[in-house]
Image 1 (cartoon, one colour):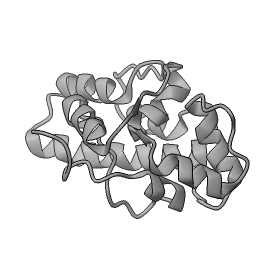
Image 2: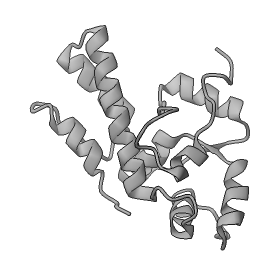
Image 3: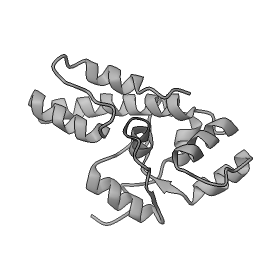
Image 4: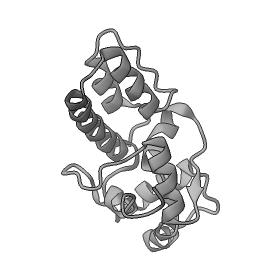
Length: 160
């Protein structure tokens, strides 16, 4: 499991004049890039897909893909300052079934150092996600089991 933001760095490095800073939030930088590049709506959509792939790969690198790997779960617990640390995968799954966290924030925390907020309900998480635009793709071919376990139905929840 990696602490660098290699997949995000690779995504942003495609744009020679763009200064990527992993200490800043990914979505804010993506929006800045879109303004600088003056993308059309179609270009924006295509680049958003490429960014989402980079986010999925980055998540997998940081936290792992295997939902039966205790080290992967404990890496998530460390990122979220969970104490005491669960000792089994079963305990981790039980904890994370009722822990609602924005996955972009979970990826960003490695670079930003910011604490990852949690939400009491899926609706609260959905409202935050919609307000900030920090969406993780619901279905992605490269998403590992751990990531799939954490995904929540954002577009079907919350208020508009």
